[in-house]
Image 1 (cartoon, rainbow, N blue to C red):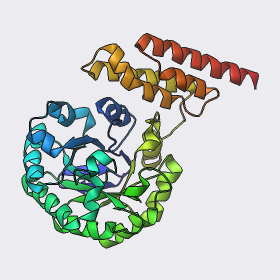
Image 2 (image 1 turned 90 degrees about the horizontal axis):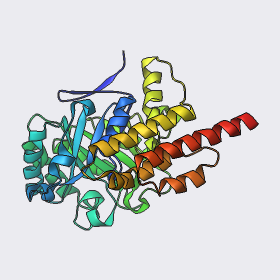
Image 3 (image 1 turned 90 degrees about the vertical axis):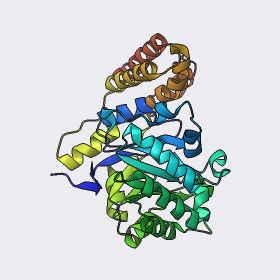
Image 4 (image 1 turned 135 degrees about the vertical axis):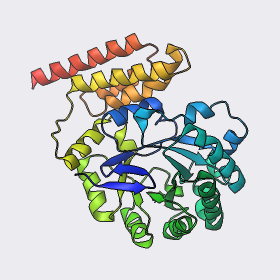
Length: 333
């Protein structure tokens, strides 16, 4: 039987989880990844202060559907009192877990003292965690961290110990510093050191793109759960592959036809869940369509065309063209 990570009453299979990604991992994305076996998903970042001031997007961002469980709602903020109030508001949406983002590197978040800026103020990070834990009651609170603010200040072990003492049920560690953003190579040794410094579960994140790199992260870091971010772009199948390995099941890579069918299903889901009209929803779908075509013959030209899509019928026609190109290419080999 597959191992699990236990966080309070929440049980997460030890396969692979979908990491939170602002502007990418919306409900449609999460549902596609869950369908293919993601063990756990996290919402896009939600501003704690924004919720407290009745942000109109609160319900859209915080609603947890049964298909997505176990799921965390992720909050970001720099003030303990607002974090506590936000947790109280979010609880009515019945998340399985509350996650606090202390890893986001983007300037508009860091500029407010939130996200990875908290790696520079560990005492405040601990205060925010403690406030969230107190407000959350029996709902587990987890914290997303980076390895540090810069290469000169790799302090994630200190931060992890501080939030553990403040009541965090687990920490997720992205093995990059803030100044790396998403470039360079993730330092898995940092994840391993955090695992050795705390007694709560540690989730590892950074540069997992397939089954082999997932297994390697488990082996090299000793982490309790692997989280996948960019490795899932246009590739929800990665979760199926990893789950099959751990559960003793069979896995066959998708054919181009299967990939295009899933791409179109994903686009239909984006359109159906959007509050915008089809043309505007397609603007959001464009990048996803392009990602599903990565790695194939002639994909660069088709990816460019993806960014011009304005209707589902256009996406359907483009997918058909793409399949025909791959078939003709294979027939010529």
